[in-house]
Image 1 (cartoon, helix red, strand yellow):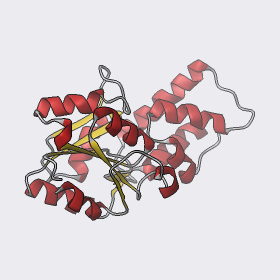
Image 2: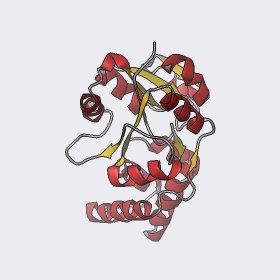
Image 3: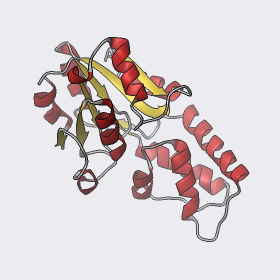
Image 4: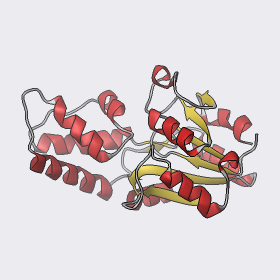
Length: 220
């Protein structure tokens, strides 16, 4: 089936931002006397929101407690540090740019939907994909719940006038699988991102792929 609208998750699907996220998180944790985390551990915690990430990261230091006020301070410091420098340490996954170019050249509308704040998502997309004419680039907005709530994706489809039957959603995690199911779109999961093959194996989706180019036969 060919889809007129293809919406991509950002982190773990289009870009590998894990080194950048880990570096900013660890600097913030260390400044407050908390234990730093390995990249593999951060990989397990990302995908929902920075609040979720920081809350779980603070539990990793044995015997160290954290008041709600201190937790809020740490979260704000991490968010501000990442907002100022979201690019360093981040890379585009091999084959992603080529995939987007082929889809847009063939007339498919491509878009980005992330749980990151929109003011961060837009410059990231512009920096790494300057020649891709995305239909939409949407991040977290205060008036819309984060994924896996389908509100953001449904709003994107409504804005473009495209029904769920003509929309594909591509992601890399359980959050993305739940989102696609809730929105009624066909969902595709990439196995090169932030979750392992085993973690993705039982999740709802139309197909799982190991490389971006493997999506083309499904999407075109």
